[in-house]
Length: 585
Image (tube, rainbow, N blue to C red; front, side, top):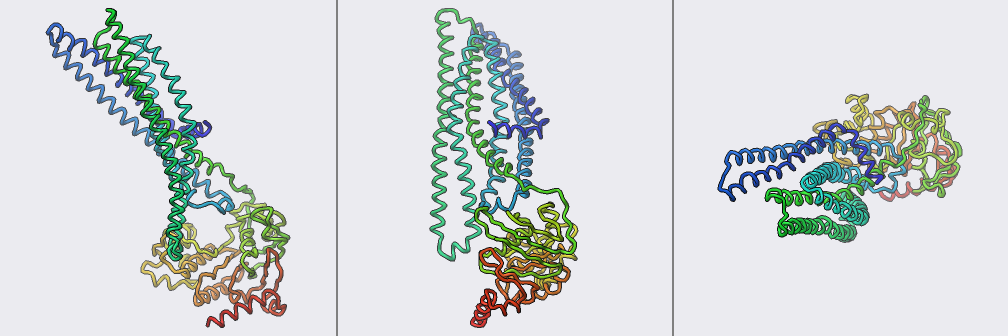
């Protein structure tokens, strides 16, 4: 009920259209329910006299037929107009919900995405909102409104013709209510399971498409197909149960009640006729039969909408679960980075608080310095960068930039003065230029070209026919790993950051490209505090400060030469890499 109320609350965005749609439906129902009364006059005033007395009133016949046609045409036009108005309103509401969900997604903490398959999020914003559009705001709202008006109008029409029959037929309402309770309880659980499995299926497909080279390279096609089939079989079983329940609700009960009620009405009037007290005309008897039949069409329509409503509620629950995810608590303070001095003061952090990955990290990076972080996988290098960029906040200690606590200001204002190049360069669908500027109007085409040239990517401007306008597909699949990294590096430089973070930025680059980037870094790091995480120790020999991490702690610190003299972990790592390179050459 809470989800239904929340879905209905979005109708306020298009309240005017829903009011107009409802008025059109009301008039359409009125004209449609007036048609049997015209047929009644046709039977009683034209057909019956012609059969009994041989008098045929052609003028009355033509007039009634034209009026009947007018009512039917008016009903059709009004029904179409109301459907058009309500459908436009439904599309607008779903646009509002999608915008709200997507904008909220941008404000969620990075932690939310750590263990969340992308396919599930895509399913919530696209598939589930489409279910809301089709099965709630279009089908359920418009059809339920239509059917409710039909039921009320038909009851009124029957009661005006025969009050006792109208009251007797009210017994159908509690029967429908009890059936609705029975159906909703069972259909709700099946709908929620169905939407959940749809999300898993989308996630599995998304993962398989992105990982297809690995799947085929390791001959795992059958294994992946079996995993997908398991989920798909579970979905099929849920759908089978849903079809059985839905078929019983939509066809069996409604059809049975329709025929039984019509039979009882005919038996009632037939008994009166045998007793000689029928007291109604043939036309009126036709009207009773017509209205009883019409009464079941909207009732059965409401029953049919139960399935759509339950599916929509299940979809709505998933969408609202995303929208209700707590956003990052954002401070209002504005952070202004001047020189770019960075201090970590006894910082302890864990992605799970009970399992810290950083313990008592303490260091200072002076303005313009290049600080390198080295260590084996899992030592905590990337976690330090995640904290500096405020993707996460430490559980203990402070991080200061120019003496300001990063927790005291908004994340956005901190990140405005930082640039980052991640280990896995991510490119968006668009062009080389749009991937450098990220469509920031403050960064011109000339600035993007300059940034790409300064990182050594000028060859891309001449290699590609369209230069900066060269199309880039999702994740930059048509570019080499080196080209993707150069574009990502140029992106960071185009924003002219005070603090530059390179997280394994040379891990996917060949030696020649590495030399180009290294030269660019030597030129550009002046006046900029630069953090480098690298497995290749050859890229950080000229760093002002090297921090060696092990199991979340800084175990050594110093310059390249001083660390070699200490003959500790860094010296051991350097010798192993040097030996490996010599053997490879």
